[in-house]
Length: 561
Image 1 (cartoon, rainbow, N blue to C red):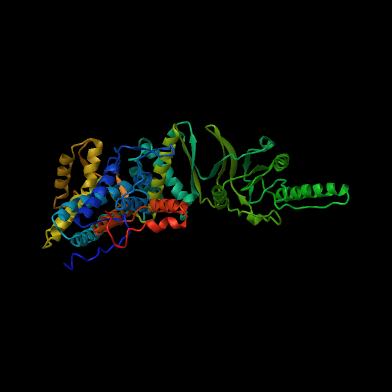
Image 2: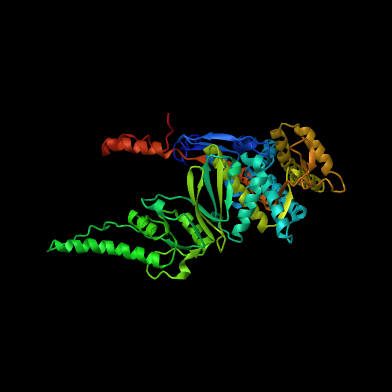
């Protein structure tokens, strides 16, 4: 009797949604699998693209896993983990974003039947972590170093890595053309870590083949005043002055008040304003600079003044472009025109203004420090150029990674099949349940070659059987064999130059395993009620005067009828 009269303990706010236990875990796994299914078809050279239309009416066509994941407005808390690993893969390595989401989804899919059969998630997590460690050791063993080669050899090896990345993108048809361009751009910036030293400028019109690389800086002609057309548009070996000040007559910012006793004094004030600007312009000319760039406006008076003295000027240059010009030409951005010495001026072999499509570009080439490069992209539709830019970003990241961590592995699903075979073999030496779990991890790795076949329209079962047979050869000669996208059979990925940096695979397996373990370790979700409804109620109550709340209580701890 006493037990029946126990009051109900209310621990969480009313309306809180809690779900726990096995059904909760299975529901989280299903959500992650649904996310993986979205990007599944974008993998590989025959992958399809996704067209994403957001609420603002912007349309994005993309094949890049990270871009798609960012644009999908995922609200499921567990599925958001997959978005995060795609983003981290993108920022760390640049490529392999679809791979990482697919692997995480597949690890969870393989874990699902064990969870339903009552296996404790911690056992699975332990085995997955062991398998991931073994897989990464195996990748490091199989990786081939490209260190110690001559520059020409290195260039061609890096171009092959870039071509492998680009083959799955929209611009895959011109992958050789863009791969060499990307390698030249990355080698141009040398050890410079800042990625923004490679500028990508987009100009609609023309064909992809009209894209070109500038070993230096190129930016669009800025807004200009009358007198601009009279300025020379080409200089050989000019000195370049970079400023962060306005060169125009401007009214006082503060509401300054000047009291005059004599109207004639007014003229002297006007003259003083003119003298200040003429003094600034005169100092710019005396510095010996032939090209003057400023982040702020250069007015019509200054434009005409410079034109009369055969000097080129451009105002309102974006911060990013100005910094790149400074890095390339060896100049320093000045905040005053007083005491401009030769050391702060930049220089380059050639400055010219060139027409690209219907835009004019200011191009600085042959820069002394040469730590920048600019790729000018051409193409038909805006969406196409946007996607080309994302693809090139991936390729640039890959080449930088391959330069730093100079080891590559065979692509085309070859490395995945080899690790899968190794883990299956290793699992046989383990007693107990973890043998099954490591086996399922090994099976999950086969999703990459299987998906490559499915996306290309080949019979995945047939190709995978051939690959398993080849990789099982005791001599180990089958290790570099992967899917041959062109014939629908299998081929030696190394011989076909389908390479990817080892760091891409290592990062992908690490991130996917972490994400899978994280989802498996969650057994309860607590969802707090929406605060908007609470705010709405508060607002409604506020309107009723202070006494309105007196009759709202339903008693402490009583259930709602």
